[in-house]
Image (cartoon, rainbow, N blue to C red; front, side):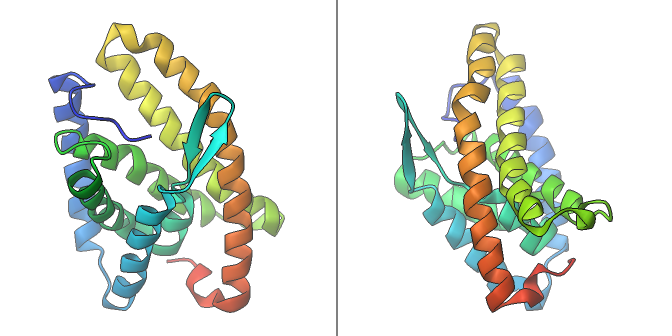
Length: 198
C-alpha cells in the first residue's frame, strides 16, 4: 500500500503532502503526556505489522492495523504513523522520501475516520464483534479508497490500476477485520481502559 517515489505527478504529491502536513500539525498539538507511551507502541506495531505478508492468489497483502491505531490514540495516529513511515523509507526503502506525505495521508486519514466512526453513538449499538471487525475492515477500506483516488487523479494511465486495487485489497480488508476483531477483544480483556473514547 506504500507509494514509491516518482509514481505520482509532482502536483498530486504536493497537494496531498500539504494536507498531510496540516494533519500532522494537528496531531502534534493533540499529544497528551499520558498517551506518549501508547503512541510509541502504536508506531512500533505499525512498523512491524507491515512485515507480515499474506499470500493471496498471485499477489501478497500486508497488515497495517491503522483502524486499531486510530481508535486507541485518535489524532495522535498521524505522528505515530509518520515516525514509522520515516523509518521504513530510510531503513527499508518502503515507499519513499518524496512520497512520504502521500503515504502518510493514505495511512493516517483512515485512522482518524475510523476513530470518529468508532466513537459515534450509533456504532455503540452494534454487536461488539461486528464493531471490532469494522475497525480493521474500514481502516483498510478507506486507505484503499484514498490510494485509488490519488492514483486516478494523478495520471490517466493509472485508471485501470486504481480500479483493480479494490479487487486485490478486498482480501486485505477481510483479514484486517478478522485480526483487528481478535486483537481488540484481547485488549478489552487485558486492558479495557485504553478502549474508552479518547
